[in-house]
Image 1 (tube, one colour):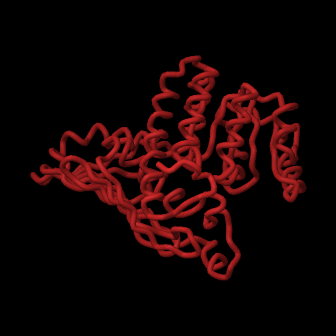
Image 2 (cartoon, one colour):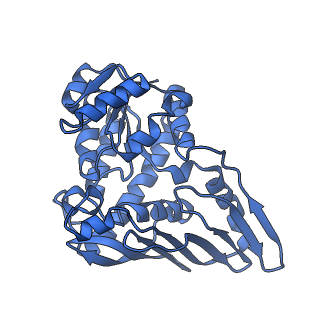
Image 3 (cartoon, one colour):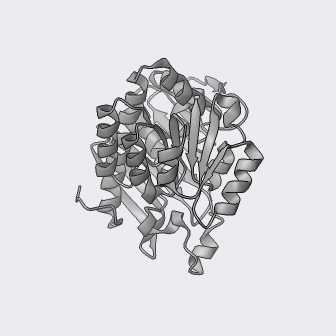
Length: 330
């Protein structure tokens, strides 16, 4: 599989050394004009044939089959649209788009053109996450769900000093809900589907949420999703039921050891995730699904991405957080 990569930031640099091991041939890398030197250095380091500082030029000239978009959130929709129009399959880093309207349009376009569109969200490809689904019936009726993914961002001090990175920039679709809490949303919605209602209580600064608590109401329980970039806390995931609970003490994007404790004293631990990069399983899955020719798994995953985007957008707009991309009120 020939892959073109757009972006030279943290996610691209994490994946580039390993993509060849996961069944991909990276044949083109696109950065910005500002990052031209870095782009060329990365191409030299990883044997990538073509370096670009213009995305349109890469789309016109590149020989890839698939585009991996590791660019700031506000560019996801535009970059994915252009790639689909050029007939390329697309892997877009989370979130799939800035809001539900954009996500819905991307999904429709991919299906219309019979192309693959994946949101790169590690949680849903982890064997430990599948194990949680398997264990759920054993804890009886679900009574409460709590998720906490909070880590003090190394960019937060600079943000307070006025140096605003994309992750803290409302103009670039940033914020804790779009970043860390997105993993929590995929974690919960992948297990229980969409909630009846959603409320988001955010820590606001300079028009962006640096942290917050998301309340999801289901028929018989509430799920609370906490995520923060302005403070740290132990990662904690607990699904409590009438017969016991399931817990993890790792963030949703890693989905580590799963512990089952039942009211009768039973305690079981599971860890089926392979060692190594957390990105490995998703990129192997993307390659396998595209080579299979079947769109079923891709479009099932895309449906979940749309559900998450819909809930995320409702929560964000309900908290008064608006992006330039929000042209349509949900």
